[in-house]
Length: 101
Figure 1: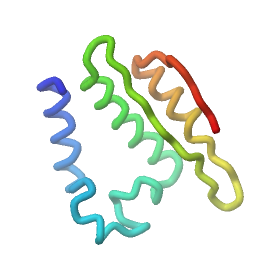
Figure 2: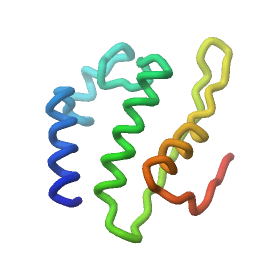
Figure 3: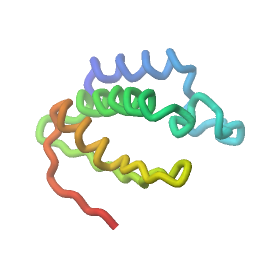
Figure 4: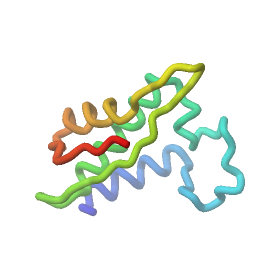
């Protein structure tokens, strides 16, 4: 990870008081660390920031893989994979392959 990306990620973690998976026993559905509890707009904004951090940390010519499960909320399917693809391409990633099961 580049120094700049590491600093951005550290600031992001500190801003949210995020502890990653340490302390997962206290992780509940309405916990702010649970991005799935955000409304769709805020979820998209937060994920785009995460993808930007990833983009700045991947070495030139490197790759990033994302495994995403679509969300079903209130009987409606939200295809999160397509959202991630659009966001990542807008940031500068280039789609290499897509596998949907």
